Length: 204
Length: 204
Length: 204
Image (cartoon, each protein chain N blue to C red):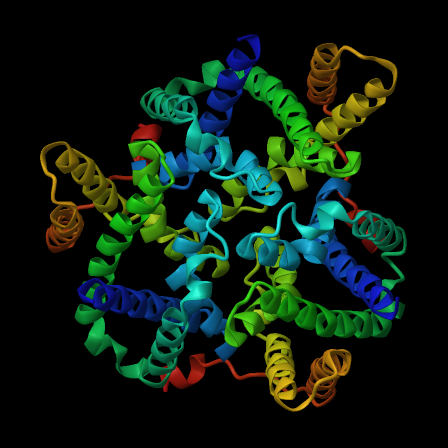
C-alpha cells in the first residue's frame, strides 16, 4: 500500500514533467497527453520489452492510465500556477526514481540477470521515460548533460547489492536503497553538484 | 480480400509519406527506403513488441515488404510529379489509419486488454509510424502539433467499443469504426479544424 | 574464438564511435557511457526484441558490458589522442559490421524468416546502433545521408543467400559474406563512393 502511494506520486511527477516540456513545444492536447504517457511509462516499457514481460506492465494495470490522465488534465488546467508546486513535484519525482530504480532491479533479479545488468535495468526504468520525452520533443536528453540523476540510481543500485550480502530482510534493503537514491539526488541538487561535461577538457 | 486491398493502399500511402519527408532531408536512397519502411510498419511493430507478438507481423508477411519496396521506387522516380497524386495519397492515408486503428484495437482485445488500452494500441498502430518517421528525420512529430489525426483514431476507437454494447455483428462494427475515423479526418481537413496549441494560453 | 575476437573488436569500435559523438555534444560521463552502450548494443537489441529473443543477448553475456565499459574509459581518457587510432577504429568498425550483418542474418534464419527479412535483420544489427546513437544526440542518422554502410551490409547479405544455393560449407559462407561487406566498405571509402542524395534531382 505504501509503495503504491509512492508509485502513484512518482507517476504524477513524471507525467507532469512531460506535460510541461510538451507545452513548451507548443503541442496540441493530444501531443501533450502522449508525452505525459511516454514520460511516465516509457522507462518501464523499455525494461519490460527487453526482458520479455508482455504485455508490458502498464497495459495490465489501469491505475497508471487513470493517474496519468488525471495528472495531465490537472497540469494543463493549472499550467500557469504549476510553479508553486515545483518543490512538491521535485520531491515526488525524486521519490519516484528511487522506487523505480529498485523495482527495475528486482525485475532483473527475477529474470536471473547479473547484478550489473539489474542496475542498468533499474536505472533505465527510472531514467528512460525522461529520455524518450526529450527525444520526442527533439531535445538532447537532459539527463545526459546536466543532472545527477542516473548517477543517484546507479549508486542506489550498488547499495542494494552490497546490502544483500550482509542483510536478510529484503524489505529493509528495498527501503534503504530507495532512500540512498533520494538522499544523493537531494544533496546533489541542494549543493548544485553535477557531473562535469568532458568537452572542455577535450579542447584544452 | 477487401481489407487486404485497404491494407495495401494504406501501406502505400504511409511509405510514400516517408519517402517525401526523407527526400526533403536530402537522404540517400538507402535512407529513403528505411524511412519508408519505418513509416509503413513502425506503428504495428511497436504494438506487436509491446503485446508480445514476435516475430513482429510484417516479418512474416512478405506482402508489406514488396509493397513498400514498390511504393518507394515509384515515389522516388515520380517525385517531381507526386503532387498530382496528393489527393489520392491523402485518401489512402486516411483509409489506412482507419483500418490500422481497428486492427490494433482487435489485437488488443485478442490479448485480453482493457478497452482504453486497446484504443491506445489502435491509435499507436495508426500514428506511430509517422512519429518514428519524424524522429528519424529530426523533427518534432507533426501529429503532436497540427493534425486531427490521433483524435480521429481515438473517437473511432470509442465508437468501436460503444457499438459492441449494442450490436452483435463484429464485421459491421469493424467497418463502421473505420468509417468514423475516415469521416472525422475528412471533416477536420475540409474545415481546417485542428486542436489548439495550449501554449498561447499559457503565457497569457 | 576467432569470431569472438572480431566481436570484441567491433564492440570496441562501436562504443568508441559513441563516445566521440557524445563528447562533441558536451555530455557528462554518464551520458557518454549510455551513448557508448546504445551504439554498441542497440542494433542487436532491436533485432532481438523484434524476433522475440529475451532477455536480449547482451543482458546475458557480461563480456559486452565489460568491453564497453573499458572502451569508454579508454576513449574518454585518451580523447585528445584518439585521432591517431582513427584508421584502426575504422577497420574494427568495418570488420564489426561485416560480422554483425551475418550474425543478424543467421538469427533470422534461425527464426524461420524469409531471406529478405533476414537481410533486413542483419543490416539492422549492423547499422541501428549508430542510428540510435545519432537520434539520442539529436542528429539525423549519418548512415541515411552519407555512407556506403548499409549498402555494404545488404550486398553482403545477398551474397550470403546466393552462396547458400551453391555451397554446403556454412562456415565458409559465413566468412565470405563478412569479407564481401568489408571489401565493399573499404572500396567505397577508398574511392569516396557514396550514394547520391536524391534531393537535387528533385528540384531540377
